Image (cartoon, rainbow, N blue to C red; front, top):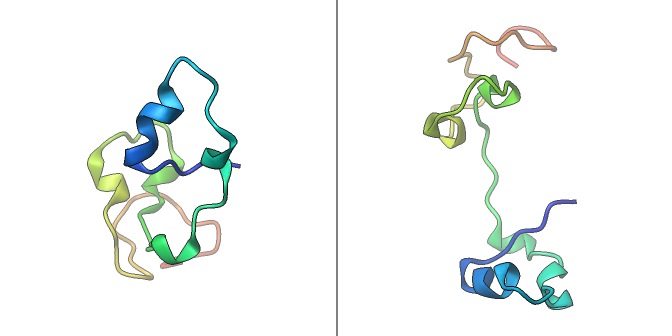
Length: 72
């Protein structure tokens, strides 16, 4: 399971000592944001900042085939 670390905790997480257990507490859901992104994120050959830009739901702005059909 990935760990979400707040920028204010970077030094505690990346220091020479073992990170404190409190850094592994669940991140509050109300502080998270979710949005659709391009299916281009599925390929390691794609590596650019546009991968994390939101897209319109159902958008087919990329050339990657969809497992579930067009526009999904």
